[in-house]
Image 1: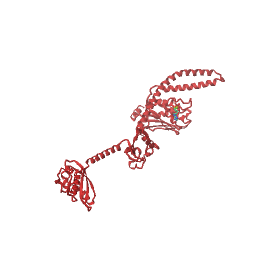
Image 2: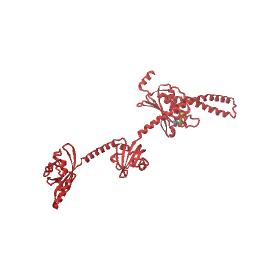
Image 3: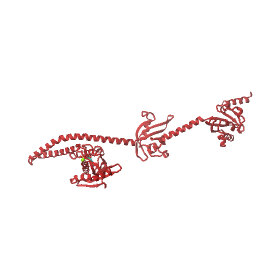
Image 4: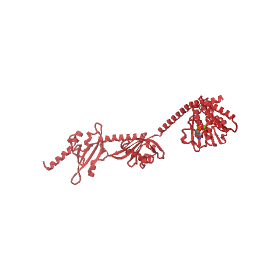
Length: 508
Ligand SMILES: Nc1ncnc2c1ncn2[C@@H]1O[C@H](COP(=O)(O)OP(=O)(O)O)[C@@H](O)[C@H]1O
Ligand SMILES: [Mg+2]
């Protein structure tokens, strides 16, 4: 064997052992050599291939009669010859059994001494697996994207410097930004001052939820318009090769839940209030009853003593004090008895405006009203309620007296009636121009014996009685508004429907 023969033989063996199906072509597309992997793959003999043009060779193996390279008139071999450089193309075929395969074909030139292309080596790689993985991956990516986008929780991600790199639709709503113009926004503007830093510090603290993890935490976030929104959030740091590359946060708006909780708490407070009133009512009834008799005899005997005392007697003034205070005690006892009177309300249909007229008539001539301007703002149509008129008048009188007390004798007292058709409710409002109720007292004013008035002036029973009575009549009393400009108390009752009104009118 000559040196040249030995070298050729060696090259051929290398070529033959290449693990990819490979052929060598002349620039005119004639196949001059094929390796055994090629013969295996296409199940052909050397003599079927050598000397033939490449276009004719693959035909048996593939279903596609026209190859993409022919179809596009974009032959890679021609390009290799023209540019004298390698070309690679990705081709999609259907095999005879009907399977789709992706092949990457690499064409490399073998140059002659003069620099022209002598031969072209074409080697074929089956990249179907990679391609399929790629497709699957992009399918999963799309799915993840949809899951993230449609999540009810707001999800955002920010890069290392805190710039927003992703936000889903719920996040757009929660924070008021659009994902399209969010790239210049820093995550810090999504929180009240200092909060973002605090969250980062906690994320990095291994003792809290582990490194890079923030367990469910309650914070306030900030909407673009400045409103702070209570949320529950979790967050993670995303690491690549141990380096922080991004952070992601998931947020759940708590406003709705907190509102429900608040309503529940209100309902609970109301329940406690009613129970408190009921047990106090029983206690008061017992005490008032016991004290009433001794008080009567104190009054009687003190009165007798006063009668028998001379005008100038030094103890006469003291006795007068005793009588005065005992009278006051009697008044309190009378109130207590009224408060605890447990009888079912005598319900009947009444017009709300009549309740106002009657109540005013009962207290009008007292000197109470000297400097008070009374404004009546009555609903033009009759507003019917089914209630105990005496009780309603008593409630209203209590409110009017409180209002006058609050105004220190001068101001405007407004009495208003109106209805909420939609909700089927009728209202009486008592407004004053007094100094209002202090915030810390608002939760206490309906408590029995709560009074801010000087000793002996208020019993603290007026509003708690009103509360109980409104309940008995299926209604409600509440502070509609209070502030330094004055207070409005509202009485709410179920309105009687128009059909009942006809009945009422026909009865007279
Ligand atoms: N219109 C009002 N304006 C300001 N404060 C009021 C008004 N009505 C009631 N209050 C407050 O509620 C407290 C309780 O009222 P109430 O139960 O009627 O007891 P009292 O009038 O005997 O003090 C009052 O002492 C007062 O502090
Ligand atoms: Mg009062």
